[in-house]
Amino acid sequence: MLDHAVLTSVAEQMMGGAEVVVEGRAEKVMRTGTRRLRTVRFEMGGKGYQAIEQNAEKPSRWGQLARDGHKVVQFREIGSGKYVAVVVDGKVTEYGR
Image (tube, rainbow, N blue to C red; front, side, top):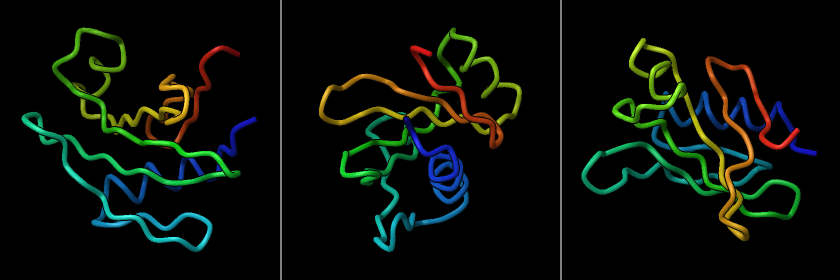
């Protein structure tokens, strides 16, 4: 079970600043290659995760929300590489539930 409060906090911090603090650890917000999307890696509950700003150019429903001005952040578990959740304007949706 993912901690929705942590995911929401990471999404808000990432979209609004240069670093994210999770469980007392500060992690620097980076930018991806050509698209320059925000991303940050962090640990939660002993597992590694990566938060990635949604690419507004994607044809998915999440891309459409980003084009419409919503703050959309995808979360990926680093170990498995699977996307586990998305946060849209502070509301968490877990995948596979």
